[in-house]
Image (tube, rainbow, N blue to C red):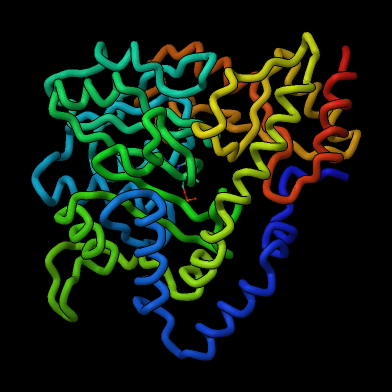
Length: 368
Ligand SMILES: *Cc1c(COP(=O)(O)O)cnc(C)c1O
């Protein structure tokens, strides 16, 4: 059996150190807004390359707070438009619509799977205030052209870095540091995962960091004084302590993912199966390893019969979801094709080269 991802094994990789860190917080008696949060925020900001990091409850909230903070700071108002890739996890869109902003969907490139920067300018109107890019599957989505469009039209660049902790853009900066603000998720299965929910916003903008921190703490900076109608959306001390341990090993964990990906890229060979364009290793932290097949469902069933777990990211794109009926008019053939053909095969910090080789030989002998 080769599971898609065994979280038990992922935790066990650094198990003792994690147990110790948790025990220390439990014994210390301080569970929220304490030194573990301060420490992790400092280390993570340093790692990403921004001057600020604000921990919050989860990745969706991180993205929600970025847009809400821009509204509170007067940079956007409800009804304004945000350009967003059509093929993303629904959280990116939820963060936009939760704030009364309007998502404008742009197709990805079929070879890179990331937002097609050649299609962005035609989607810009006089109501556009931001471009949200998503480093989907752990692949860098930032291009010089996207940066130039933001400068030309005065748009905020918001990064959804939920799947790409440790990834770089072509000029060497880390994803999460090239936009005006970035939302990060520490959902357990992410490259940097907590033992529960967690998230963060990184930015170089002190006013934005301040607003996000305030919003995520009831809208309060000073006890019992409320500046915004915020919510309770904080990162707890136990999760911050766990994340601070795991951050030390993120580079090594990502290197392991890259070695597994190299095995897949070098050896998968089947006319029924294709892979996305291979990026330089610095620009992909392989949160997922997507393959494509017009016989995807049969491939998934075949792998399952042979003991290999897979997942689909994602079977139904946002504009086809019941909750987004207002987006149903979009015609997005590339996004829809990805949804019908994508299959994510096992990758992570624990899978062995032998297991990866077994996945390869199964895929190579898949036939109809
Ligand atoms: C996981 C994820 C999120 C949301 O993060 P949560 O911590 O689960 O709320 C947002 N965007 C993308 C692309 C994700 O993969």
